[in-house]
Amino acid sequence: MKPRVHNRAPFRLLILLVALTMLAAACSSSGDSGEGDGSGDTTTTAASSGGETTTTAASGGSETTTTAAEATGPKVLKVATTANITTWDPVKSFSTEALYLANIYEGLLRINPPDAAEQFTPLLAESWEASEDGLTWTFNLRSGVVFHDGAPMDAAAVKASIDAVKERGGAGFIWAPVDSIEVVDGLTVQFNLSYSAPMELIAGSTYGAWIVSPNALEAAAADDTYFETGVEAGTGPWVLESYTPDTEILLTQFTEYWGGWDGERSDKVLLSIVPEAVQQQQMLEGGQVDLATRLPLEATAEFADRDGYTVVNETSWFNYLAYFNTLRPPLDNPKVRQALSMAIPYDDVIAVGPLGLATQARGPVPKGVWPYSESTPQYTQDLEAARTLLEEAGLADGFSLRLTYAAENEIEGRFAPVLQAAFAEIGVDLQVEAIGFGQQWEEAKSDPANAQDMFVVLYWPTYADAGTDNLWSLFRSSEAPFFNLSYWNNPTYDKLIDDAGALTVTDPDESFRLYGEAQTLLVDEAPGVFFFDADAVYVVPDHVSGFDYNMNYPFSLFFYPMTAG
Image (cartoon, rainbow, N blue to C red; front, side, top):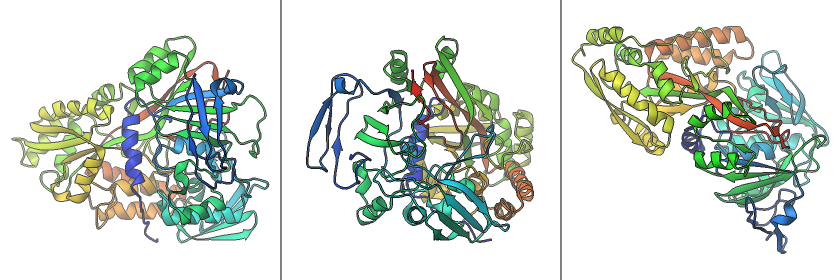
């Protein structure tokens, strides 16, 4: 099997950094008009409510001013969110702007929630098929689809989009199995793989799988800042009407959307960027917004007992763990790592950190994502067994460790003292330090031998395959530290996940078995400690219809079916 090359760009760090803040309370959902040809610069400003809204369009050489009173006619869905913009470039994007981009752009298909009747929803591809060996995938595209700039969506556009992602995409690594892309005809595109891979899952990824107008791709290739004024060129139901940095985004219907606009639909979606959870709660309760994507965790129980609201609590992809630095004593000894794993009161960690809104993890694969298995073992607190293991390791007198967690993440800040107290019970002095995630990352990457002893991490798969992502990225060995910041090197584990990844399509049962062996080995060797999978929690007012959480898109809400009555 050809080795996977995961070339994550700095956007992965940005997405983690922003998400650590967003997930302090449950899980977040999270220019020129996209109706034009995408040329020229645009500066836009829009007020969220009341007063005067001014929109200035520079690209056409004219200036227009509209007041809020003139915008009272359309049916507007108002949303408070924490999601800011790191880039408007759909190719580079690997951060929380996915909340907006997933409504402007589309992929070939969408992965449905685990309880759905069908696994996939066709989007830009009406159908697809794979060869028996899983090396050739053919997608038959939907006819008559146009981009917001008027260009036709066809096989050449699909090829150009994926080629661009492979070359410079923030999530370009997901296309590593693809050796070449062929335009068979105007509405047929063929992916030729160097090793079998689940292309349905890859093509349904949030990041790195959006299809973009060739006109915009050409412009961005000549000017890498092309998108950053708020230019967009997707096929999705919404176009970007205006963008005020750090303040708000206004989306409006793309009237030529292939899915149509029958039934109850919002005319516009106004998204206010509000970092503070308490302020979002106040806006929701005061009727300033119809939906808030981040509320204080403490508030969710209150809303559950109030008329007019429904609390949606679903399994999510967000997995909390901590790396052990296995390069130096005493954490180079598996018995010590096992003892520390046994010392942790997991129920208390869950009760204090996410306030009970989580379930204990089974390794680094979140529940509901391939290849999660209920057979993967878990540690439970057993202080006596932990002390025995430390005694066998010659450490009955105790030792000190340094743990770092992201200062931006309130959940980690709440449960870190629980670990400190538990370790003290077995004679281990745990020094807890809150530092910025970027600083943690830099320390762990630049000087592994002297890096922190424990590094708390929040992680989730990029697409619906935690075998080729979580299990590979987090714990497979590599010559230089990539994302395996435990620095653990186990050839048996490496071979198991490599072999399993090569069989995902052609022999999924055997793939699942091998992944199961790998996960059991991982938990037993304990290069990390696995805390919990956080729940996704939303409070939905009764006047909002069409809300549908999809765990496969952790930073996206799809506004197309939603309306506020």
